[in-house]
Length: 114
Image (tube, rainbow, N blue to C red; front, side, top):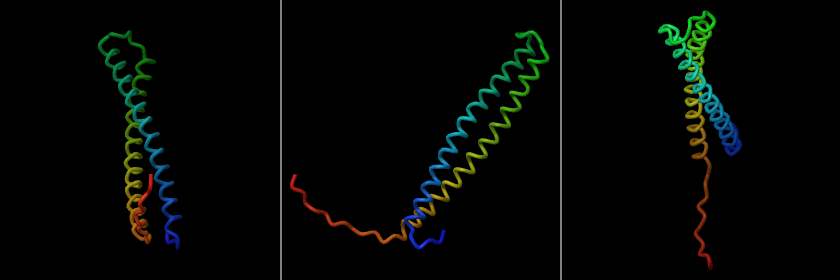
């Protein structure tokens, strides 16, 4: 981003940060859903093993799929969240550097009459 106007680059970085934050929020929802799937699948498997639920291969397959799929979804979204957080940190550092390059003016204090 070697633009002459740092204001445009700052705007693009802020838009990217907002995109990444919404991506993280979506990942958090999937993480919650995956935790529910892991818990539900685990409970059903334990209930099948101890006889609380009559053994049925379909229930066992479904519970196993929920357990394994939940772990996969959980891990994938945690990894995506970490990557997005790292990108946000990088974008915020670049934004801070660009803001530091701007020649800011000090506005003199004015006495108001109200």
